[in-house]
Length: 527
Ligand SMILES: CCCCCCCCCCCCCCCCCC(=O)SCCNC(=O)CCNC(=O)[C@H](O)C(C)(C)COP(=O)(O)OP(=O)(O)OC[C@H]1O[C@@H](n2cnc3c(N)ncnc32)[C@H](O)[C@@H]1OP(=O)(O)O
Ligand SMILES: NC(=O)C1=CN([C@@H]2O[C@H](COP(=O)(O)OP(=O)(O)OC[C@H]3O[C@@H](n4cnc5c(N)ncnc54)[C@H](OP(=O)(O)O)[C@@H]3O)[C@@H](O)[C@H]2O)C=CC1
Image (cartoon, rainbow, N blue to C red):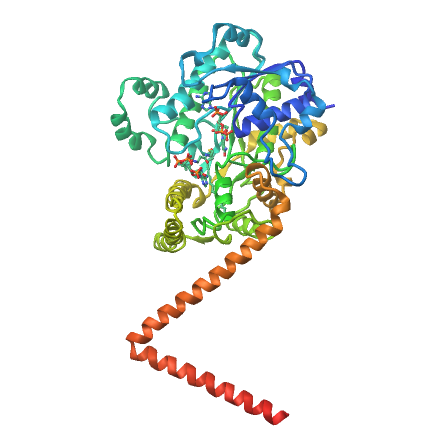
């Protein structure tokens, strides 16, 4: 019997960010392992043209490609529907916008939340690296503060679990499971965002974020400080995952549905847009599968509520110090998988070189990214279509420049609390809520990740693989043809202009002629 699964039975759980990547995997696991839980409240913001019910329906029935000829890929909640057929009734979507005062929750809904919530998992955040500081502060700091205020009014609340990021202190090389203070108090930042105008905020942003690379990591660090300062009598824990990737095992391997982190680059490599990347092959790729993060989160929820640690514990959910993989190994495995299972309608054949210095990066960006895009757009214009490749390539290059910080450095995260928690679990819980990253086989995981990107994110049909392979063969032939034509044109121009080139050309031609004459003579002799 799993103590953790048992603990969540009959509970009312509030999840923010349940429509996001991690939130969905968290909700799925909760329903699958504790189908007898009372209700999951999810705070959902209205989105253009979609009602709350439609958004919930979308989570429970991920869209499928109607043209699929083979068996459709798994839906995330497929297994849940078997063990908890009334899952629809147990999700209570509450209209809320974390950017608004009191989250714009109706009085009635607020009353229900305050009266019944037993556990809170706070996953919502803006994860955009380039978000304006005002917006990033609003969501990652002020909303966390407001949620803590709400939590303090919940009489039944047993635990508040805050999802942060292992990169909140990425300005340090070695990071312990403690909260590191930021020079300016979060309260001062929150206040100043109310009266400073955008232009001034833009000006002070670099000074405030200091040696962090972006507003995301900075505001997540401020969010942690707020959690520490406002914890009061609450039972709180903070989880810091590193780079969250597709699921490892549950509910099935390779599930992923958004393009954040490495996923976008895997797609770009598979489609042949990404041909070179400024990354340090030996730098640690601190990836962590989403199901490991979720298992740790649920175990932390249980431990925090039942054992009530005296202080706020921080748990690093990272892989680097227990089972390291590096970007070089990851890149090779991604490309090897695309050889076997290519994506459909690739722009070029998947091939991505790692470069480590600025000059080669600029060179390859010009030759492998910009030039093919310009040529392709020229072709689109000639055929009367709208050019789009240059725009797409510019966006990819911008994304690459934002991610570069994370793929050219290595960090060390201590994991004492996470290992302590593992030792407190029963053998059954260690199995059901497995967060031991040492058991993960990277090559197998990355292969499943790539496969998952194809199936779940791009919703491509496996029956299309032979056609995708044919397409890559055609691209290879076009590549050879193009290179040969380019070589001949360059050579022709060179011969026309240079005596040395002409001499070399005559030497090669006469050499070939002599060789062929000799070959013909010797074969005539044999006869
Ligand atoms: C051989 C293979 C080798 C593989 C090597 C793998 C290397 C992986 C490196 C990953 C490092 C990740 C480090 C993350 C560390 C922090 C983790 C966290 O805590 S936080 C969690 C992590 N948080 C994050 O990862 C957030 C990172 N993302 C951002 O901050 C923003 O998207 C942006 C600033 C990069 C672009 O903003 P903006 O220009 O306004 O545009 P939009 O957002 O509207 O998207 C526009 C277009 O860009 C496209 N695209 C988007 N993302 C990616 C991507 N990752 N990739 C590729 N493409 C991407 C997207 O398709 C779209 O195309 P289209 O639909 O127009 O055709
Ligand atoms: N992905 C990763 O690599 C990592 C993520 N994390 C952390 O994990 C958590 C979850 O990340 P992830 O699932 O990847 O992120 P997603 O971007 O997939 O999800 C973010 C969630 O926050 C919700 N949200 C955003 N703004 C608002 C708002 N104004 N009101 C209500 N809800 C809002 C989104 O709702 P909507 O659907 O309406 O947009 C969505 O459900 C975050 O706290 C992140 O910092 C930490 C380390 C790595």
